[in-house]
Length: 98
Image (cartoon, rainbow, N blue to C red; front, side):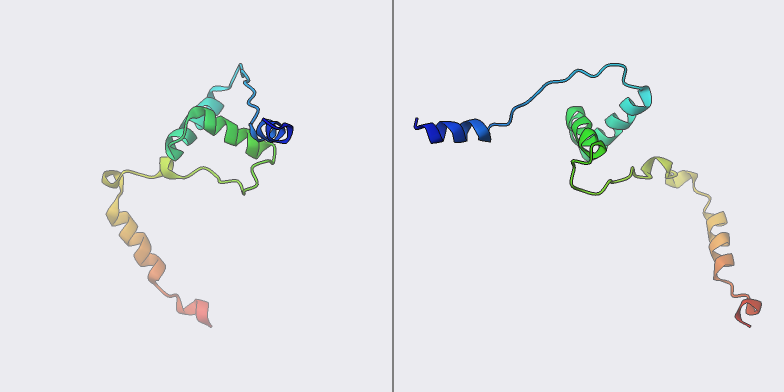
């Protein structure tokens, strides 16, 4: 193999370094697992993405976590209360328009 091709082959290979991270807080672990599951990626990929974002290397804006975990189940929603609240918001107070 000519020298230039050997050099090109060497620089195009990604050098991978392996790290072991200890004493990960439970909250960080659960958030990483939640992100991995939500985005359907491995835990390793989620951790790498988090490190890249934290170091400002991701080149993309931070995506904040979704609110899906705060959402109520349809059977738990009080539809009558919601309808009443929305109806009150639709009322116009004539005093506000003077």
